[in-house]
Length: 120
Image (cartoon, rainbow, N blue to C red):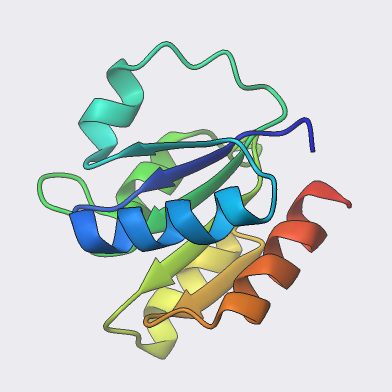
């Protein structure tokens, strides 16, 4: 797989478990604990896939997704959350998210969403 998987989640345990799962499936993974850390990183990942937590301190996932641009985020985004509601789900899809998954994320569901997101 030539697309890195980028994870933005403030929960280190979630980041670690996602990293273990994805690396076990041969994926390159980078993780960040906030949207600010992610934005500050050198991101030359034109073909990346972003797994983005909905509820983050300072700037939440929906706000960050909205800030990525009017024409969509440029990279496929899979939104994940431990506290879902229909308004957030609808807004995520309006902003261009390709999937909206609830934590704890089912491994097969996540892998399927990544496959759809990157066209593999």
